[in-house]
Image (cartoon, rainbow, N blue to C red; front, side, top):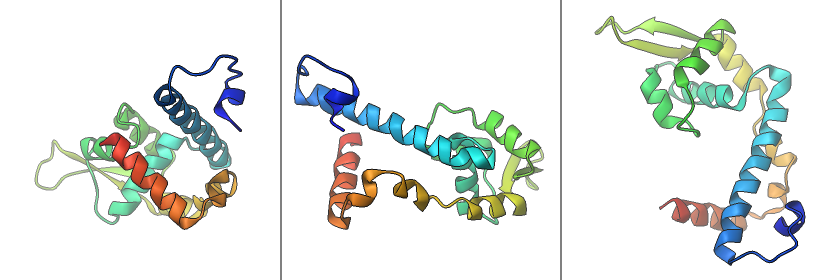
Length: 150
């Protein structure tokens, strides 16, 4: 769907750059809604899933909250609050660091590993038009987005 139709825009955009910024924001929001819907049956949010994937990538080692925050997609997320909710669900655990008892390390649990294995991230692409991209278009889009972020 064209951005103009999505936004029910009657006037032309001020510039292609303005349209690009809006298009990226609208597309990001659309993908976030799809991801949230995909995760709903598992009882976790996109931010919680992001933390689980970060910890899964480090498993069996751990990260502290600050290291998790640095790796999160949304840097404004409250990693401590998210981790607390994942602890209640039994998906991660908090451990004191042996070398510094004040430092706290977070590790994904077996239950968390099982849950991330159940969630097929590739199914998100099956719900979007991304699957209609060929590999070269996907590579170019990734390069352009990387370039945009500088």
